[in-house]
Image (cartoon, rainbow, N blue to C red; front, top):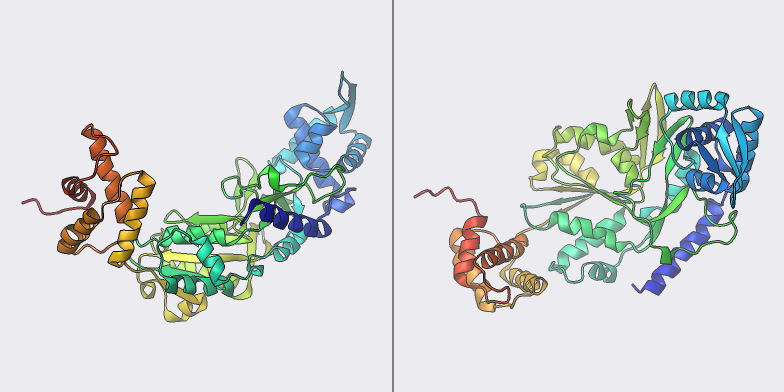
Amino acid sequence: MSALSSVSIHQEQTDALQQLAPQPCTVADTGLAENLLGDLLCKHLHDAGVLDMPQLVARLALTGSVLEELLAFLRKDGRIEVLGQTTGQGLRYALTERGRSAAKDALARSGYIGPAPYPVERYRELLLAQTVHQSRINAQAMREAFTGIVMRDELLDQLGPAMNSGRAIMIYGPPGTGKTYISQRLIRLFSDSVWIPYAIAINEAVLEIFDPQVHKPLPVEFKKPSLRLDQGVDRRLLQCQRPIVITGGELTLDMLDVRFDPYSRQYQAPLQLKASNGIFIIDDLGRQRMPPIDLFNRWIVPMEEKKDFLNLGGGRHCEIPFDLVLVFSTNLNPLALADEAFLRRIGYKLHFDHLLPDEYVRIWQQECDKLGIAYDPELVAYVIEHLHRPAKTPLLPCHPRDLLGMALDRQRYMGQDKTAALSAETLNWAWRNYFVSLDVS
């Protein structure tokens, strides 16, 4: 897709979202309680000492008109004072003694100091408005997303309908067959963007959503700035690429629930919430420190009812739309992980197998091009016929990259130029060092 068409798509989304999430002009427009916003503003002043209006706008992601209303409320309550102007600056604000005490009390309840949160009621509407299932993926889009990837057409034509189905997907097969790599590349099927709140407010609890490791803001050229501060999309939302979250053997059940950190006094969002409107990949299924059935049971209600329930403790629960593409990836036999009744709930089960010789050759040639070395068809034929076949080692997509990389490591060690042709002897050396051998004779 061209840069011009991408800009057009993102601008259309921005225009549409302005109707759903316009800039708030009053405290009531924010959907938040005046006390919650007042406490947050006091915490910012407690953190920084003295702030002027532009600094408050940047910190709280609210318009000047909303902040002026808040500042008037806090001044009337005796929590802030106006320090006056300095050269080239507007009015500056600081906490009074009463304000410092109130800020400490607010920090004791919640350690969150960031942009103003987005109300959970509006967040539900936002998730549904930018659902990941609104895009219809066709055969052409699949082939464009996987251009340059050696992959069988029948597998591509299984993945496409699976992505359109709205159901969970299980990818299984031997290790090294490209399951994780292909799963990660699925995000390329989506050229549109989504709006992510910095945080959401669930009654008095503030839950951080935006994670810079997951959410990638759009480059500046995709954004059309508004000259008026009260126009455009709510500043509490950040325009990002659709997210993709990948977790593996480190996954624990508590990572799928809201967690409260008693030291920072902040709520941490579960992984699936960060992946909302995107893709959530659970890799190495069956290698987690919990029985697979416990992990599967966690997803029964979200998969069937398309909604998740967040537990904030103290008997407080919150319902959130479950809007994402859920992908399970495993090296194990799916029947060893769950019974057939549960596997039916998943819907699509796609098997990744070993390569055929011609596929292996195409990947070998691609890796040679990436590494800037000459492609020798006789050398790859030697590897297949004299190394793989006698050892009965299946052909995997990772082998060309790894064997060629190790062969170049040896060349550098021996002081040979990178452009020097690789030899069968060098590939034999790489093979012996790559595979585990228990033959000590």
